[in-house]
Image 1: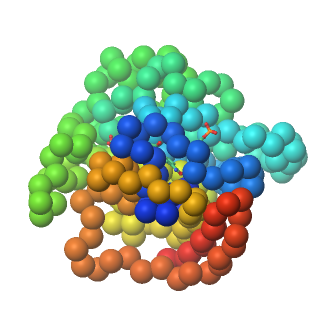
Image 2: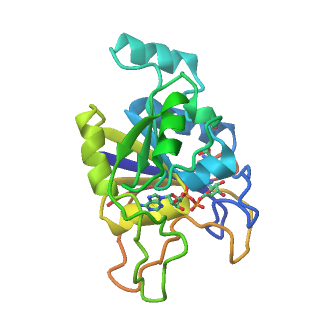
Length: 237
Ligand SMILES: NC(=O)C1=CN([C@@H]2O[C@H](COP(=O)(O)OP(=O)(O)OC[C@H]3O[C@@H](n4cnc5c(N)ncnc54)[C@H](O)[C@@H]3O)[C@@H](O)[C@H]2O)C=CC1
Ligand SMILES: Nc1nc(O)c(N)c(N[C@@H]2O[C@H](COP(=O)(O)O)[C@@H](O)[C@H]2O)n1
C-alpha cells in the first residue's frame, strides 16, 4: 500500500481548535491541491474523530477529475475509509451516501447490532484487530495499553489491498496520523502551513497519540511552495 498523508496545520502545528471544530486553515488553491491528491488515490482515509468533528464528504469537488477517473475505468470517486474501532460513525454521516464505497475499519468486538445498522446505512465493514476497547482512555505515561482496541492499520491495509486499493490518501486526524508514523506506514507527507496561530494544549496537532520519545521518524524535505497565504511542504519518508 502506498500511503500519502496530507493535512493543513496552523503555524503552531494545530489541525483545529480545542473545540475540535473544522477551522479554515488553507484556501482555494490548497483545496484544489487536496482534490488532485484525492483524484490520484484509490481511497481516502480518516479517523472516526474526524468524522464526528467535521462530518466530511471526502469525494472529488472537480467534475472533470471524476470524469477522467471513469474514463480510466476507475470509480468516479475514491473509496472512503474510516478507522472506527467501536463503530461510532453516525448512520447519517455524509460519508455513508452512495457517491462512493465506504469501508469502516472496526475491531473484533464492535457491537454486532451497530454493525448491522451501519451496513444498512451503506457501509462495508472490515474487521481489523483490537480487543474491544477503543484505546482512547487507556494510554499511560509509558504507552502501556495505549494501543488497546485500536484498529491494526497494517492488517486493515492488507484487507483493503484485497479489495483492489493500492494507494491511500490519509486526511487525518492527529491520532490516526501518529499511528501511521508509529507503524512505519507513511510513504509521503504533504502539509499546508497556514498563517495563523490556533494554540491550546488540548487542540489536535498533526501527530498526537502518545508521541515519540526516541527513534523519531525522520523525513526528506522534497519541496517547498508558497500557496494561498501559507506554505506547502512536501516530504518523503
Ligand atoms: N486541518 C486538517 O487538515 C484536518 C483537521 N482535522 C481535525 O482533526 C480533529 C480530529 O482528529 P483526532 O481527534 O486526532 O481524531 P482522528 O480522526 O485521528 O480519529 C481518532 C480515532 O480513530 C479511532 N482509531 C481506530 N484505530 C486507530 C488507530 N490505529 N490509531 C488511531 N486512532 C484509531 C479511535 O477511535 C480514535 O479515537 C478534528 O478536530 C478535525 O477537525 C482532521 C482532518 C484534517
Ligand atoms: N486541506 C485542508 N485545509 C483546511 O483548511 C481544512 N480545514 C481541512 N480540513 C479537512 O478537509 C476535509 C473536508 O472534506 P470535505 O470537503 O467535506 O470532503 C476534512 O477531512 C477536514 O478535516 N483540510
